Image 1: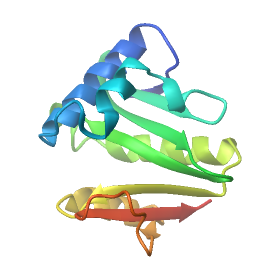
Image 2: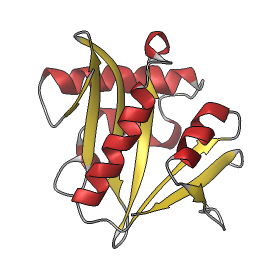
Image 3: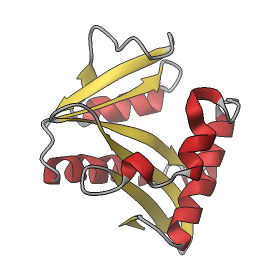
Length: 153
C-alpha cells in the first residue's frame, strides 16, 4: 500500500470517483454543501502549497483518499477521509490519517481540525488514538450529529 500526493492526471480521476462513493455512502445529494462544485474544481482548496490531496493505492487499485484544507492562520482541516469498503480493516484509514498529520506538520500548521459523525465509532477511536480531542464549542456550520475534533501539531 502506498499513499501518493495528487494534483492532476489519472490519480485525480481516482480521487474524484472515491469522493463520489464517499458522498453517496452518506446518502447526501450532490448539491449538499457544494459537493458537485468541489468535485468539478479538484484539487481546488486541496492544492499545494497550503492544501494536500492524498490517494491510497493497494495492489494497483485506488483504495482510499484524504484531503487537507487550509483554514485561517495556522489552522487546517482534514477532510474526506474515506476507505472503500473492500479495503477496510487493512490499516489504510490509519495510514491516510498519519499521512495527513505529517503533511500538515510539514506545511507548518499548528492545529489540524476535522470532524466525524457520532455513529462512526471506529473513526472516533482512531482519531483518539492519534491524539485528537473534541473541539468545544463546535463550529456553527457543522451538522448537529457531527463531532468536531482537533490535534495540536
